[in-house]
Image 1 (tube, one colour):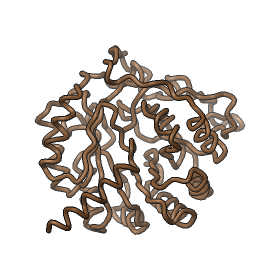
Image 2 (image 1 turned 90 degrees about the horizontal axis):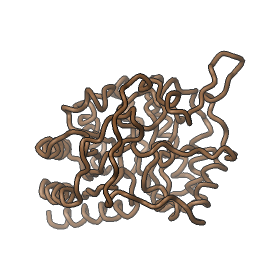
Image 3 (image 1 turned 90 degrees about the vertical axis):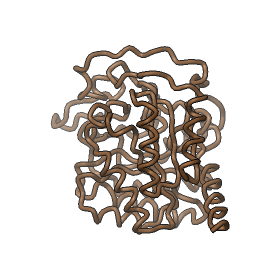
Image 4 (image 1 turned 45 degrees about the vertical axis):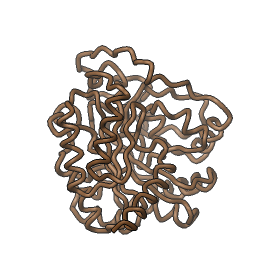
Length: 345
């Protein structure tokens, strides 16, 4: 889930400046993604939504420490983007201090304009053919047992970036054969159905695609996507390879009701989704979708109990839950839950 406070960019970073921020012979206007109007041009003329004060159970410490800085250094040295920074995840300090970072491939510019998301939007640059190798090098350098790879939406590409995902998975497998791989993909909405097979054939351990919210809120929250297409995508992964774990998540606090959340759970289980995440939506800027309310920890606990009752193998439902939060530990639990279920059969 891509939401949080606007990211801070270090002007002293040695990370290469993305092409969208350069003025190339006057052909592309200079764009500064630190400026909200340029980061989200599609939202510039939207009315402001008040940003309510966060309750005590949502607040986190600012990212600091040697572990955090070491992880950040590796990301910079390999010229890699992370969704932790671009979406300003509130858990970045905790995860990076342990050497865990969710790498975001295919650039920093998304072709979609979801109203909840802080990823920059616009026309992306061409794919970097060397990126899969750099990701694999960073995974090896960090010594990760489990890695999460996500991406921006790339509606400009015929295959939506499916082959780039597959190449990245294969590069990690070659460099770090013992590392388990979790991918968080776009919906490939404008692609031929066959592109999904390219990703599945690369055999990620976990295939994650987030539904993000209840279907009734799609027009206002996720206007470029289609709820039942995303649901079918997850179902097809299982049909193509039943051994791959499937995972999906939603945000709450966008204006949904409890009945809607339970319906999404039922829809996911009908698609044989194994792992459900539910987290609190946090509004990145006044131009983004408003926070309808802050869901209490008690309500999250009730969602968790209901989800396990519906048959999910693994559930993470807390205010600070995000798609890749504690992903490595959760994968171990997920695998153990499947083994236990098979033992009961």
